Amino acid sequence: MTTLYLVDDHQIMLDGLRALLEARGHTVLGESSEPTQALADLLRLRPQVLLLDLNLGRRSGLELQTEVQRRGLPVRTVVLTMSAQPHQVAEALRLGASAYVLKGSPATELMAAIEAAVKGRKFLGADVADLALEALIEQDSDPLSLLSPRERQIILMVVEGHSSSAIGTTLHLSPKTVATYRSRLMKKLAVTDVPSLVRLAVRYKLIDADDPASSRRRD
Image 1 (tube, rainbow, N blue to C red):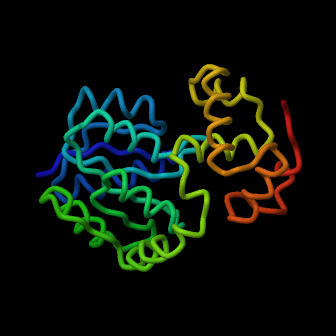
Image 2 (spheres, rainbow, N blue to C red):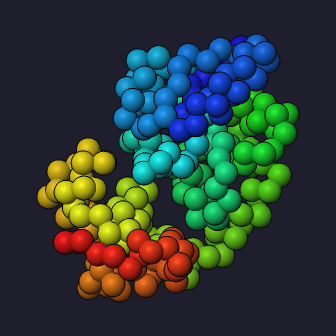
């Protein structure tokens, strides 16, 4: 059957997925809760399918997907996530995901997604096709669609008030690299300061306007 690698930041979810997949005759070669370890394991284990959550604490599954695509790894990605955001559906598909399934879907839907991925076909969960269409409609009007997954990750941490040094520590980047990303994304979005960046993030629902972190700023 199919060999898989699991990425999710909730151990109970990993345990449940492993039990489900092995009961269906699949082989789980490994698991991780964060992108750096997952990438190292993918290079070593070479599974057929990567079962990937997008929300990994302060990091993003899209970050791992970007590396998989950049390195040309021969693994099919099935996104299994709670995220029903149109822009995330669109970005996952742009980065080569074979399937996108929402958590809470029946197990049969996940199995169908895995089967489609192995056969080189695309699969969208029951509620995902409409999200993908919505993303196409929104793409022309949402400036955040111009950002890469890494830039989205950094803008979120900037507007939450994290310094370049703190962001670099979390993402394993130098402060200089973070500053470069920050300058580039602000140029893309045509904003000149962090308060303007915060207002843009609130307007396009990257953050909640009621989040107290959105009113903080650290240099």
